[in-house]
Length: 312
Image (cartoon, rainbow, N blue to C red; front, side):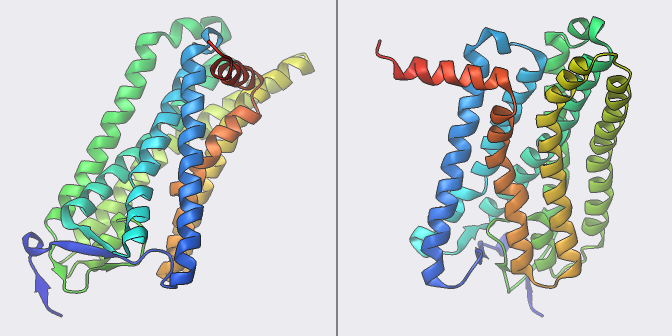
């Protein structure tokens, strides 16, 4: 098969989720609605945490960072897809595609790290409540977020720079609605052994360590909760963890679902549809999970909405 050097590649083609023109308008409406709901929901979370002094705690600080990250993650994929559908143009530039790969890895990785940090926050709050405010001081909170961001950026740059060394075939069609790392590597005609080994090695380390941290935290949390004498204390402790557990289950469940679907099926379109779950649906549902299951958040949102709606 003929190859061309990566410097000569001008663009890739994103094949979207369907070739049917009749369905594309429906897909455009659905994804635009999901995008707007995600932006609005997460912005409300950020504003509620910012303006309500009762929510100036470590848990809600991390939640507002998670919401900001969700906005960035979905913005790195959906707008380009919507523009392509409107223009009836499937192309994305080589630079734009690599940039999209990098941003998805950065924000996807940051979500992974933030969920682990939030689990640690709940561990300290429930298992060591007397020293919670001392341990989770403002400096440590900022440090944990910055450390998560740095790790995510290094992880993303590592993969993106490794893609730069690849040469690509003349067939540059990506059967996806955004430039996903695995799909880009599959298009390469040069040796991709190092890239594939790096993907599995780094993914195992990068996803495994935070997941182990989450499991470790919740093992100790459950153990501490069961030792509490009052049922009211147990209920309060579990209620503060319920939203986080739901988000963790949704994020990792959809992520593993994408991996399993790519293993058991050869249909790249089915894998692309499965990817919608972790790259779009999770970010859209997070604000609902945290607002509907949290009394303090519901109160803050009511005050925020009533304050903006009332005349000055």
